Amino acid sequence: MRFVLSVIALVALVAAIATGLLDAVRSVAVGGVALTPIASPWVAAAPSSYHVTIAALAAGAPGFVAAGFAWLMAQPVIVPSAAIALAAYLAAVRAGSSAARGRPAGRSAWLHQSRR
Image 1: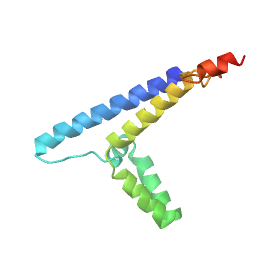
Image 2 (image 1 turned 45 degrees about the vertical axis):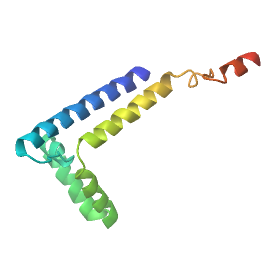
Image 3 (image 1 turned 180 degrees about the vertical axis):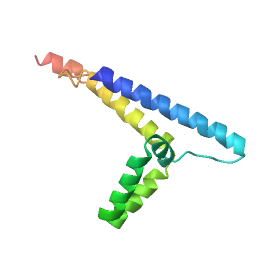
């Protein structure tokens, strides 16, 4: 499990760095800040699923959900990519730690060993 989470973290980190680099190059080219919103790659990759999601939210979701989704789709791609990378990395570290395997680690390790 630790390996899978580490690979997910690596892929998400590479995606965050790549999108950040592309946004930086685009910002230099236009002479201002240019950030790629989350909706742009989604529409480019699978436009039908994006439009179905928007239609479903417009038809059945409360107003605050649709507004929250619109706000989320306007965020730069680097933000969720970096957040996914951080979460996967922390989960991988936790999965591989000695505390996750039932053995204490850190300052209290000697205390638990002396009780056995």
